[in-house]
Amino acid sequence: MMLDLQNPDQSDWHFAVEAPPGKVSVVIPDLFSSFLSLPPRVNPLYLKVKAESEAWFSEKLGANRNVSRKIQKLDFAWFCSIAAPEANKEELRTLCDWGNWVFPFDDTFDNGDLRSDEIIGRQVLNSLLSVMRDCRTQADTHSEKTVLVEIHDTIWERVVKSSQPYVQQRFAVAMELYCEGIIAHVGHFFQHKIPSLEEYMAVRRRGVGVLPVFALMEYAHNIKIPENIYNSTAMRELRRIGIDVVLIQNDILSYAKEQEEGVPHNLVTVFRTNGMSIQDAFDQAGEMLKHCYRDWYLAQAELLQYGEAIDAQLQLYMIAIQNVMTASLNWHFKSTRYFGDKNDSVRRYRRITVLEDP
Image 1 (cartoon, one colour):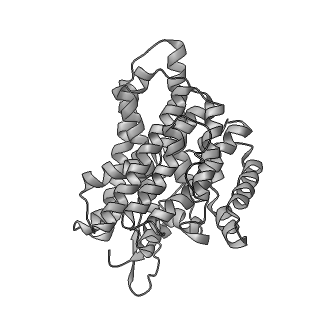
Image 2: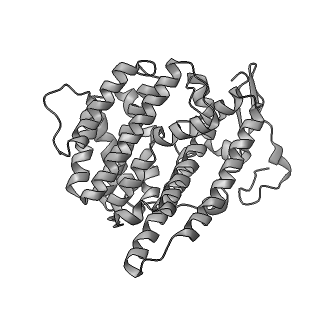
Image 3: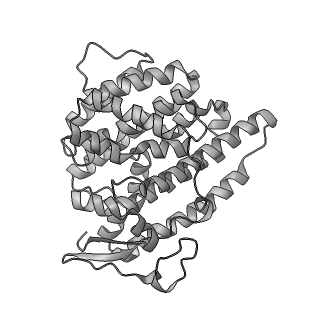
């Protein structure tokens, strides 16, 4: 009997996944709920831009077939095409290039050469940020840059070319915060520090890299929001909720992969190392998501009305944040990065196997 995704209350809902020795089977929260229950809209340029972005990125890295296949399986173009379903080809291409850049870059700090080298890590991050800090569109030719940093410089050039200065500034600030979060994670790893939930969330909100995506949504859709409104309490809360939803989604769905790779910065890991059982840890993450869904509607209700022109831009911005949350969730079950060929099974039965020890 196949389980109908629209009618989960069926007899095989408690389908059990047999766990091999050293592992346990757990139930993940129901993630496709509230405003994330609707099917996503996908940009019709998805396949065309995906192919172009992946080919360009592989060429820039001098990637062999194995690396090229990894980029294709990542399929971050799917995320971008849901996040920006109405973006034109040029803007969608920039989003896809940034997405294909951020994962290999982030992986060097998660489980690569820089995961425990804070000094070199800071040098790489300063190199990345230099062109944005200087408000220039050309890479700094006076210092050696890695290929990944050079790739990001070209992405920054496109953002500068096609966006307003305030959008460029928001993207640059978001990237600065992202880098601060990355280096804080490296520091925790190097010091073998187990953060509290509050400490973890404060760092992870920066290091998860969602705020730059929000700025890229402004770029892709030419959203115009005055600075005083952008920094209002309600707007900051909407961004916080959007970041938290993506963060929690990712930590739930990436936990098994990151646990195998020894990546410590994960919400489930924080819960487990602070005394929770494995199932309780996943359940608590699910409760946090429910609070986020409630807060999303409350924050929208707190937005002031500024007149038709500005209110229309605010609606576009809120739709963009919601699209990013939708994109993140659906992409996790499209890419093979986390569950390989078991995406459909995990989504249907909500069961995964994880290591028994934290």
